[in-house]
Image (cartoon, rainbow over all chains, first blue to last red; front, side, top):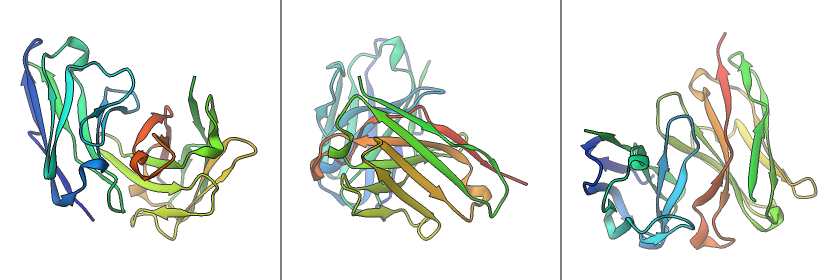
Length: 108
Length: 122
């Protein structure tokens, strides 16, 4: 099983700042099969990025993804108030598909 | 508009059974593989099962293998999860989720239901 480790656990930032979230895999993941989701309290997750860098429909361009192999990054260029949430990476390269434990982006 | 609506959750005793349903609308259900993903209270996401578009292929996470069965009825646009031998650690919100594309590149989840809570407790 591929274990995804996200860091940091919590990111405290102010609106307008840049957020950089990391996802490290225990073994190599094809960049074709890495996604990121956003989840707000009481809501289902929302797909942000698929295939490491492709934005899902309707996702603003302040969200970007990058990486390859075992290291992947989600960047939010300028935080908007609605971006404060928990973010999960997800690998769908190798079964069982797995998620990272999440990074909470909170208002500083 | 794509909609996924789960039902069937509730309180069940350890060792008991429950059947979840997910009614789909707004897309060609029979074209897409479907999944169940769960989230224990205050915890992260755990993928538990996938079924192919036709229903002839399934896969499970290790934590539910042999206890849970995923199925679908394409004539009713409905996904199911039969859960047997339930344990306290199965307590979670259960989401159904649709694949992004109908190929291997699209095995991530672009639409999710609102979730249904399953509580396993005596």
